Image 1 (cartoon, rainbow, N blue to C red):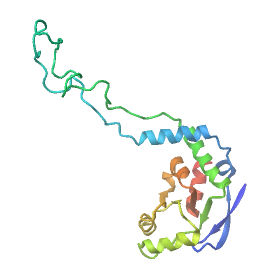
Image 2 (tube, rainbow, N blue to C red; image 1 turned 90 degrees about the vertical axis):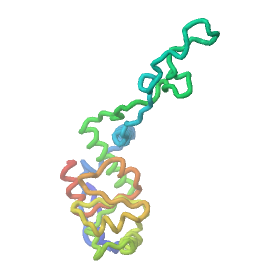
Image 3 (cartoon, rainbow, N blue to C red; image 1 turned 135 degrees about the vertical axis):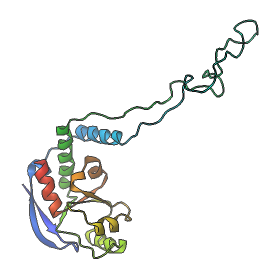
Image 4 (cartoon, rainbow, N blue to C red; image 1 turned 45 degrees about the vertical axis):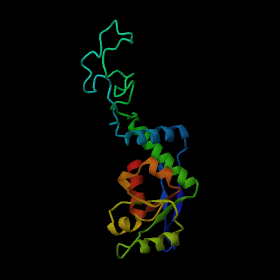
Length: 206
């Protein structure tokens, strides 16, 4: 069972916490992480793109000229894909990009992502981040003290002062524990948990 220091917002140690091995010490399988990230990104696509086929384009009901005798190629509609203003051949149509992934696999992938951050020593646990007011400058000082550059900060209870102060810092993302996901963990090299959040995540993923 891994034991990790708990720090305060000025980077001083104020305690320690034991991390559950079934959540933070899972063998990483890249193919599982890849599948879940693909599924998550695909689910974000709206799939509402569309082009008009010859049947959807308005007009073109009358045959442009008679079938034979004009010396020109036969034609049945001015909305043929071969004509200017005609329909599109095999253009995109509305569809769902969803990739089905079982819930157990998603939970396993999240454990793997968390385990990878701990193995790389890029996981940090803080007792709290207390900001007296909504001020980017205030959070920037905390981030500098902790050495945060591209970090995901996970909290349990919403703190508007923290969320609004951090949102203008490039590379820093705040997320509630119940919204924790594989993609956000992997795209941030640094993972920061507030103490209440890490306890909540462990309870849910055990």
